[in-house]
Image (cartoon, rainbow, N blue to C red):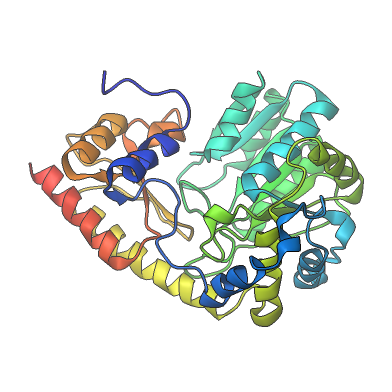
Amino acid sequence: MKYVLPEGSLISFFSNKVKQFGGINLAQGIPGFAPPQQLMESLSNVALNPKIHQYAPGVGNFQLLDKLCEHYQSYAVQREHLLIVQGATEAITLIYLYLKQKIGTLNVLGFDPVYESYNNLPRYFNDHFFPYNLHDNKIDFKQFEQDIVQHRIHLVFVNTPGNPYGKIFSKSDIETIIALSQKYQFYIIIDAVYRELYFNEPPYIPIDTNNPWIFYVNSFSKLFSITGWRVGYFICNAKHMKHIRSLHDYTGLCVANPMQTALIEYILKAGIVNNYVVELREKLKTSFDKLHQALKELGFEIPPIDGGYFIWAKLPSPYDDGFRFAIDLYEQQKVAIIPGIHFSPNGKNFVRFNAARELNEIEAGIDGLKKFIQN
């Protein structure tokens, strides 16, 4: 029975093992790095205000909205284009529900392997998901366009840097996808939660509130290592946002007031992309390089990775089942990872590692992997 796939998210399944029974969590995208000290102090301070423990404005803290408008001022973003939500996952779900209400049955495409929401939202709402396989890690736009037409695609997910595969799409790729969206009238959700966590060059991600086909999603979760706070946001055309805000009133309602207030107090002092983010990027790259090198030495095959938290890796011979590998690895060495089948129908012999941990945890995980493979 231990090799029977559980219902629900494999990310939750393997991460919860560590939370219940201990071990090294290289499974869920939980950063092992402490949040900014100033931010934690801000949360402590605002928690003492008795008024702060009531509902926040449904659209989000007004100061936080204004600071985001300032951050994206080169794109002429205004309050009417923004909504603060409970993490990027809620943003994606709200947009999805809105488009489903607008269109009906949705045909959805994502670049394989995909983050779990992209293929599971269509599954739960009886829609259709079509994975697009990269060719030598590149988009074959002739084939891509054929797929768009053949499957009558309504929505395309673009995740850059990606999860589980940390690819950054080029400026040419993004502009071509946008041009095709206008030609064939499909929507694009650009998931940019790892936007600032790149290794060399930052991703090209345009924000155009005049373009009704683009939704831009981001979050503070990974930026400040506060995944438990669940504070994200998204930007879109004002006509869409008017309807989505109404939908949000009856679903998420608002984001926790203390978290938003602490964030704005911190951002007013430090800014959004600040020294903490620069240092975090460097620490992440150090941990990534350490784990990446060890995996290659153990025989894992790894495609080029440009940023984000994760390493998408093909199992070394003779292993050919990522789920069995992950189950046995945790049982024997208490190291949790995620089977590739969770992200792709072609991912049976792949696994995903979270590299966003302190070096001592990365080294302990490597040690457990070595013992497991040697035994």
